[in-house]
Image (tube, rainbow, N blue to C red; front, side):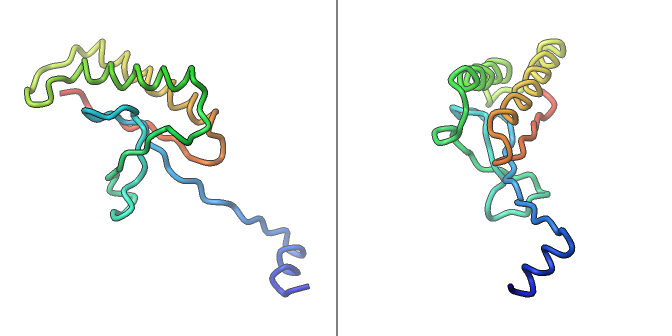
Length: 123
């Protein structure tokens, strides 16, 4: 038995797998509101790159809900070239729904990802 195996056995050390971060956030023109940290940026900068759901273990029901949530964001914030105020009550409902969807997504992807909801203030 190798020394490392012996140490693991003797000390009951557990090796924890690091989960990839998966962010729920919206952007104009995206099909899904799913993003991962940009591979060329430090994670703490919160720069992200698009992550489609094509190969993820997500139910059709949740896929539909995420797609609709992304579309709702587009309606709330469009057109992106114009600045306008978003009704605070509608925005609060949207944010609540996002947190609910993040919880559902976490339940479905399990330990493969750590899901976080990123929502900026509406503008």
